[in-house]
Length: 349
View 1: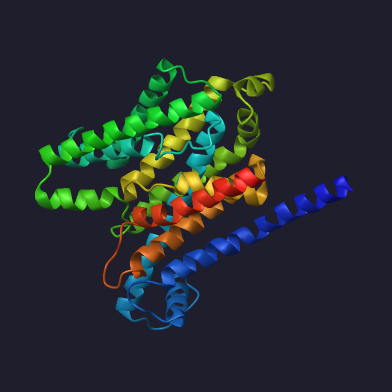
View 2 (view 1 turned 135 degrees about the vertical axis):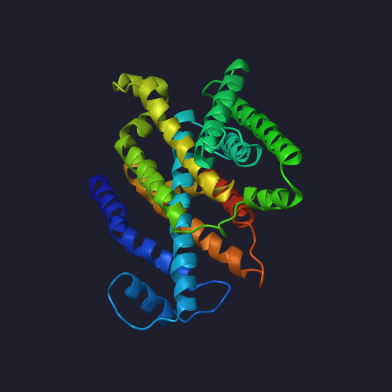
């Protein structure tokens, strides 16, 4: 009976993989069809068909521009960013054996924001560094600082260690947030400061197709690394000793996984600012749905993160008529109650 039940469960878990492309396409279509200005779904499909070379109908240039250059590009970048942030949280939770680990809580997002603002506003790098490079340097610096602080405070792998690294992450976040505010106050004009503060809350309004050239490879890299190291992530979830006993090169694997998580976070921060709760809520929700095995959990988390951020972006555009809210506000308003539900359900299981 147990064998048959396990077989049925495995079949169900594999079955959803066939639906993943359809779910992602549906989310992208929804993100393209819904916005501040109402455009009929038939017009949206017609524009997409013509742009894809599947039709030759005459298009309204305004509708075509809104649908193709604004909404679809925004939905694609949101999907890639959601997948990358969710996978970053999943990787950090497995490596640190800490259910609260995610880029926002560990200070990685704050460090990436500081790095991006330093390059964009203060002019560090003399034009040789891009915002993505500055954000990546800030993300790695923040993680290294948080890890060093947690180690100095005696953090380990138990409950005390989990609390120590979260406290270190909070301290690191506050420090880098303060540095960001200082840089803005010292170097930015009033108009720059207003735009940057709105951007730091998460803003996809300025996203266009060139941003997808970075976001799509970032999401693909995070997904590929996560799938390739699914067995290692399973082992790390039981501790570094378990991983070492399976012949896993701890230093190389940890460096690669942490670098991937930091890079994904840094690129998303450089494009859209700091967006919280995606890397915290989505992995936990997917563990409830598909189980703890990372071979299934990695693709499920990527898909759910992509859909979650696309839907959050749609809500940010339509919840207040005539005004676009920062997407980080939406993810926090949805993510905080959702995480409370996940915690309660996890305790009851």
